[in-house]
Length: 280
Image 1 (cartoon, rainbow, N blue to C red):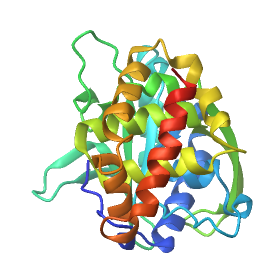
Image 2: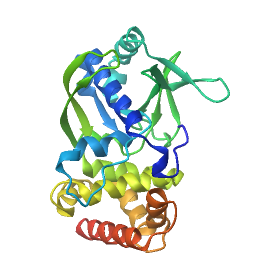
Image 3: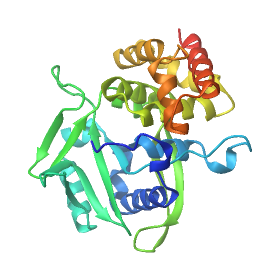
């Protein structure tokens, strides 16, 4: 995946608006396939926790640079991904290229007053599947193997998007968005694999702000505690997020302020510690 900015200053509301518009555009084009897709990644917090629901003391989520979409295994079993890619091509999407000019089949792009990319992810299906590997499906289409993604299809929320597409069309569509329990698992595993400041921030933001309190997140996470991916995720939280100067709290603070911040780090330890306790 593309490198993420290490601080909040690298994200803009304009880029997030473009990503939301592309998400809506995709929904208008994929239609009957949307039940087999779930939005994951950096767009999730702002969709699960709308700005108008935040109190005056809470800053809005910084947003995202791109769109991450999880694919259900059924799309593989039924080869419906061919319908998906056909529709995307007709809608103006095409595979992106990396900094070396090599085609990235798991990441597609469209220009929307500025390039927006979609990363496609899929749950492991084979015993030797490892997170971050690429599953090839056809000549120019692939998906990143993402452990824990299956949980996003068990814990998901239907969110209504009303906006303009990149073409200026006004539209309203319902989309499936990863729920808070599965999101904690996916972000903890992502942090374990790449240690990004943004992953730590996204995880903490959802735990801190979703619903009416931590119990609302815990209630979504507890049903998964016997799942291998969730077990590994909770172990990551214990290891990295429960110490004031641990890598998790420090990287949340660094993302928000550019350096250590005792208040932010204390909040991370407090909220994540309570979540772990409620799921133990």
